[in-house]
Image 1 (cartoon, rainbow, N blue to C red):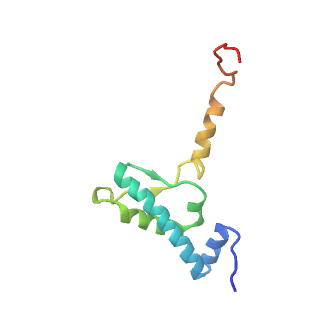
Image 2: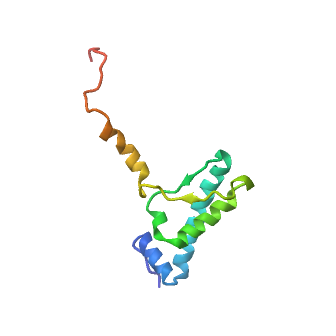
Image 3: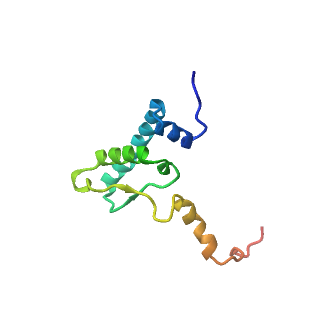
Length: 116
């Protein structure tokens, strides 16, 4: 019998209770998600790599697999670099995109004066 998990949090709960399929799903996804920024870090040489969004919040199983895959992609000078969570919560991209609406004055758009 196949049981469906409602969302990733449900899969994480099943993994925490020993479900091998749920564990495999989380670690497979985390390894894939770790390899991509690890490869980019090799090319760019950053001082910090931030992994945001809700998925990293599902727990240590995901975080450990992601960090291991990330580290496996790094060249020697970057081997100590690890992905970290954003300082201001899991949604920095949304907050950054919304920031101009809080700081920019609300005024009508500039027009050239040309007739339509």
